[in-house]
Image 1 (cartoon, rainbow, N blue to C red):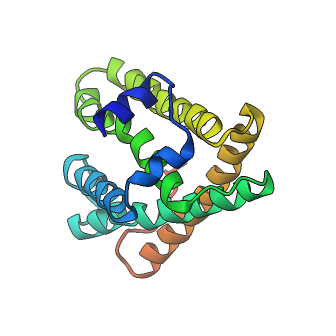
Image 2 (cartoon, rainbow, N blue to C red):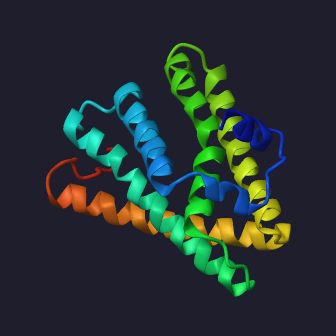
Length: 180
């Protein structure tokens, strides 16, 4: 698994069928582990309770599953019969670099430079998935970019829906505008 992650980091993904060897259960467990790490280790606003923050981090897993399902449907438009399991494993392995954001978030509280480093790591993570999605599935970079943009729209809609549900349940406070 480490070799596969390192290959993704240097933009050398395997064909998508290769990632079929990782079971869906393993990929979901890795996603839950990453979500729990974010929930426990990232600083949270005082207004949001620990339980609400933890639940929001766990909601990342179903969101990732839905976005992956959406991407598999987009690939069918290109007559690519990519398995959901393989694409989800690829997306999880490509997002491992995001764990670097946790220590950088803490360091950014003390040094402004780490905010820029966080942005660079985040953009690098997007670039990894962009190239891995294109190369592993044998689609063009244009289709990969379009898929990522459409996936981002689905992601935003899901996050907004979850936020509204959490606000309605009283788990997080309503957003307020700053005084004018």
